[in-house]
Length: 613
Image (cartoon, rainbow, N blue to C red):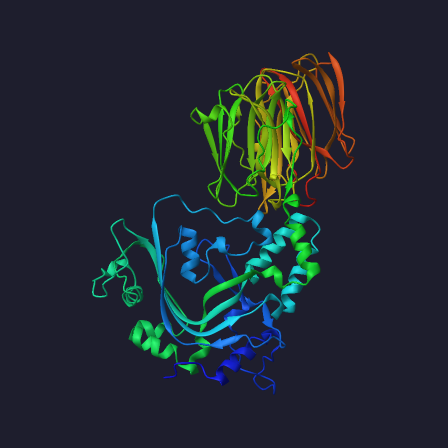
């Protein structure tokens, strides 16, 4: 049995690091064909999974041919013991990588931050046996990216918007990796990682019996080989890297080790320990690297909606914690106005509460599942306070309305073209919120967009203390939704009542129709108006006075119109701010009749994707 790789084998491995397997002939009959095992050292590693780092499937670089010979054969079997600080550090150590805090920053770390490990007093420990065969130590200048990697990055950066570029690059890094090793040990290893009880130490007894229901036999064998049997209260799956795991499971540790160190078996050796690494973007040419860095710079990551409420300096900034995913929104309210708010992120960070909530119990919470985000925020305001807040998810689920249900306050809609809410800035007193600003992307996140949102504009007619309604929950798919039918009280001497709108949309290829409750419940004969395909309301006219919408006249792009209600009070005439906008949906307040109306103009739905009624 060889105890040290010979110079010929070492030279062969070094030369294999200089090849781009994509350029190698695939035909065995080709005179230049070489049966090539791709070294895993040339592959990127991703950290975006829920478990430990994993090696990606594609070669992302090769070592330049003029690089100073930077590989040394080595021998020896060492046992290493680490005490990681938390669950996340433990997963990295288990894989043979430095803890996240010891790795260089990646350009996208500002938005895709690692989740914080749950707080606790767990005593993590990792024991690894490392069989060292080669030591590699390179600089980033010694590496040349494969052409395929450069091409996919260039394609991602050609997307039209920054959001699309970020999403495309996110997919690139998932396939090609996020970091690459610079200094590493090649060989084989065994690893077991877990938590110890308060009275436990890691002086295991290989003779300790381990009940068969605690895991597969190979795990028991690894732990016995590492002399830690039965010591962990909870643990990761024990791991073999390099060599032939089937030999270990069939014939035991001694047979596996004897086979693993044989020089002829060098193709089975892997990267088992990383001492130094770099972000995968460091491989890119300077002009591409600078584009990526600018794209993910913090100033490019956020957009802020205009502030609503009292115009005073902000007392808190919802972007202060960086770009994160929201897990839960907690609110404090009394049914008339908002006392306080806080946002809990998936990594455990929390923004708020700021005043009232510090000493009072939470009134309600809105929870988001994995993959969900807030895309729209509805706020009802009066000059001195935030009266109510309502959130809409990318799934179109609408939260309860927190705060006011009936009463004063005009609605303001905050959205940013489908981008994800990052946080809320604003001002507060000891009893209430007085001003808020929505943040999708650290106010609004420019890197996370759920759908092609339709640009909107709003106008409110009338003031009222009646019951609030919001038709957003009846849109179905917001991108394809349109008004397909309207029912209304047919009268010329009474205010508008019995208004009922049907919204049609296309959800997963199926037609969807949702009809609102009556807006204004007073009795009267009802008429129905159905719209043709491609027909949209482009003008809203009528009469109102204070808390009464007396009359509505609706005009479509095809020249059709309907007028209903009583001609009294002041007149109003509403058209969209842009010629290509149409009536999208409405909000308002009603009791026996319609008392206030907020018209939401939006871009037309996608053509050909929406059924008629």
